[in-house]
Image (cartoon, rainbow, N blue to C red; front, side):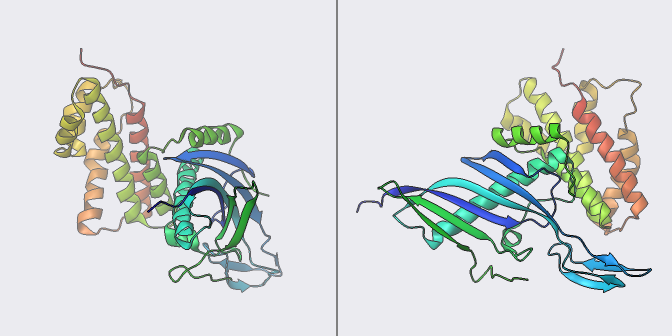
Length: 332
């Protein structure tokens, strides 16, 4: 049986993000795996209203913009500060019409491309409030907008068939309900990351997660993610050093699997990396104090204070930056 002819189709998915990105309204071109995409951003900012007396307060749900409480204030409409994004790419489909299965696959690709963009953005902008969206969050309605999917399929006569609609299914129902910007140089850096298909390193992303948890009072998660960031960068630098000195990748992976962060530092990195003698290297402080804190958090369910967490985060941030800046050479 002959397979149906595959037809090239343009897809465009638009949605509102839960955050206002610190980006100028623009078009960004990216590549994630085998998928090339174009992403357009547009910021939306709505005034909260005017206070009519002392002690005025207005509370909103952070993810949806829904008004939850207003005291002593005039609120003409819901306060929404968010960025609308449109993701555009081409895919080949089987047959002459876009099926429901095609749309589901396309939405999965769009979600992955968006998260690639968000990871690159938060790495460059150091925006700890932003994170990748889960598939469920990708479908959520914000600003009165459902997940809109458009397709434009080329026909043999040169014309196209345009379809458009709000996507939903039994798992993802539709529930309707002056911006700041990073520097131009950072925007250019973001574009380069996206065009090249770079995936940001894990350690800085974990530190951004930790900073978000710290700001929202989730001190245990902040310590755990910050500590994981240190584990990741120590193992990555050790792997690079071992590979440069002629060891095979399989042997390196087996060796590092049996070693924790402290052992890797003492046995591999400290004896071989060029650490200035007079440098303020915060390693000993981490070993004596913040490694102990991390173990209490993980094994004893200890809830550290905000001050403890901030000190731990600052120590690990400096340590990760220091280790990442070290020169990796070869054995003499």
